[in-house]
Amino acid sequence: MRLLHLLRFGLLLTPAFAAVAPRAEGRLADGRLADVRGTVYDSIAGQPLVGALVQLVAADSGGTYGRTAVSDSLGAFRFIDAPNGRFTLGFYHAVLDSLGLEPLVRPITVTNGGAVRADLATPSAARLGAAICGAPTPQNSGAVVMGIVRHATDRRPAAGVTVIAEWLELSFGAGGINRRTPRRLATTRETGWFAICHVPRPGSMTLTATRGADSTATIPVEVPTSGFLRRELYLGAARVVAAAPPPRDSTQSDSTALQVRRLHVGDGRLSGSVRATNDGRPLAGAQVSILNGPQTRTNARGEWMLSDAPPGTRLLEVRAVGYYPERRAVDIVDSVAPLRVALATFKSVLDTMKISATRTVDMNLVGFQERRRSSVGRFLTPRDIAMRQPFATSEIFRSVPGMFLDRTMDAEEKVMMRGVFEDRCEPAIYINGQWMNGLTSSDLDSFIRPSDIAGIEVYMVGQVPAQFQPGLSGCGSLVFWTK
Image 1: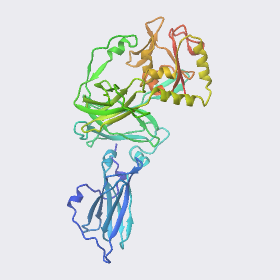
Image 2 (image 1 turned 90 degrees about the vertical axis):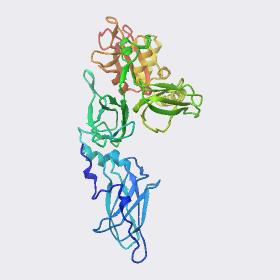
Image 3 (image 1 turned 180 degrees about the horizontal axis):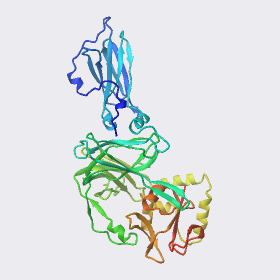
Image 4 (image 1 turned 180 degrees about the vertical axis):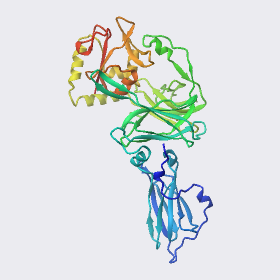
C-alpha cells in the first residue's frame, strides 16, 4: 500500500518545532492583535479531536513567527498574536499515525487583523478508502481495514508482521450452497502500519497478526457501512502446547479432545469487574478467561484479575450461571485500564424475543410446533438454546445426545451425528427450508447467530420427515428456523 501522499498539503510540520521556533512580536501597526481560531475534527470517528498539537508557522521568506496550541475538549484552538502575512497551519495527533498519514497542513493568510477562521480535519472515510484502495467498483467494495501493529511489551511499532483478514461468502446454487472464504494479507511497514483493501462492506470478518512464533488471537471485527475500519493490534507470544485431554464424556468427540490446546502462561496483567445489566449488581463467581489460556473467577464484589495472561491482542470470555455469556477482543498491554463487563440475564433477552415474535405469524414456526407435538425427533427452542450459553451456533450440539463436533480429513470442523452405516455421519442441514450442502462449523457460525435462532429440529436417521431428507444418505438432518 502506498502512503497517502495525495492527502498532504504543502509543507509538513514536526512536533519538535515548538521547541525551537523563536517568539516573534505579533502586534499589528494599529495596536490590534490578529485572532486565528478553529477546531480540529476527526472525520472518521465523527467527533472533535482532543489533544491535537496545532502549529501556526510563518510561510513568508524570512518569517520567524511560530506558535503551538493544543486543542481542547471541544477540539478548539486559538492564536491571538499573528501578524499580517501568509502562514501554514497544521496539526499532529497519534490518530494520524494509525491512519498512515503525515501531519496535515493548510495555508492561511492574515490581513488587517481581525478574526480568521481556519478549521482542520482528518480526511473522510471515503477519501481515505479511495486514496488507499482506489474508487469502489462492482467487483471491489473499496472498503478498507487499516491500523498499526505494535509490540505488546513496550508498544513499539512492529515491522514485517503479516496481517490476515478472512471472511465467509455464501451463495445459493442448484446443488445447494456454494462456500468461499476470501483471504487477504498485508505486511506491516517500519511504522507498523498496514491496510487491507476490498473487504466486505458492511460485514463480519476476522483479523490475525503473526510473525514467526508470535501472534495475536484471531479476533472478530465488524466493517461499518462507511467502509472504513481502524484497528490497532498488539503482538505477543502465543506459542501453544498440547494439554492433557479432558475427561471423555458424551458431549465431546475423540477428535475434539485431541484438539485441546492452551496458551503459554505470560506475564501480562488484566483486571476488571462483572456486573448485571439490569440492576448493576456485582456478579460473584463468574468465570473469566482468556480463550485457550488462564482463567479465574470474580470475587464477592464482582472483581477479577489475571496476573499471568499472555500479552497481546486476545479474546476474553465471561460466563455466569443464568446470564448470556460475552466474548470480546482485549489488548493485554502495560497499564491497561480495568475492563467493565455487563451481562444480560436469560430472562431479559427471552422476554425481548417474545415481544418481537408476537408481531408476525411465521408459518414456518407453525410447522415447527406441529412437528414438535409429534414427538419424533428433538426440538430446541430459544429458551433451550439460551440455557446452553453458546458463543457460536455449532457449540449448541456439544450437549445434544448423539451429536458431535469432529474434524474431517481436510481439517474442517463439522457437526456430525451417529449414523447407520458408520459410527458418525454428516447430517443434512436446512436453514429456513433451504438445503445447505457442505456447511462446516465455521460456515454455520457465520451464517446464523444463536440469538437469531427461532427453533432447531434434530432428526436422527430413520426419523427424518420427507421434506428434510435430500436422499438416502444414511444420516439424519438438522433444521434451523430463524427469526
